Length: 98
Image 1 (spheres, rainbow, N blue to C red):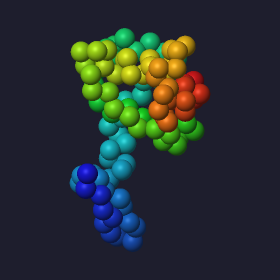
Image 2: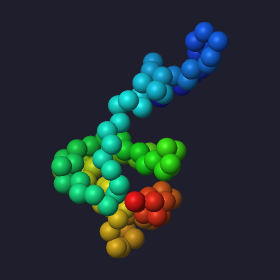
Image 3: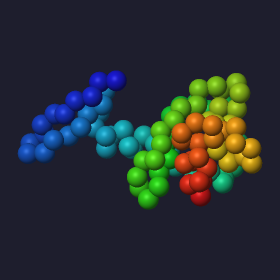
Image 4: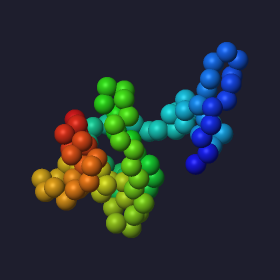
């Protein structure tokens, strides 16, 4: 991924793939806390991010659309077993699911 700083007047703007961070931020869709119902995302794939008090805690990806997609990936963080929490971000996502 291309990353660079470009001068914009007196301020510096950070760009990723030709867009500012603000432009990329407008692309996210809010789906609510991890305690919600995500069945509408069963075959959706893509990136997701976790925010806590407006700070990005984690960015992940869901790419298995035939296996539950984004819905399954988000549910992995909330189920009673720890199968979705084996990696570094899992406990963070579980602890901050609300």
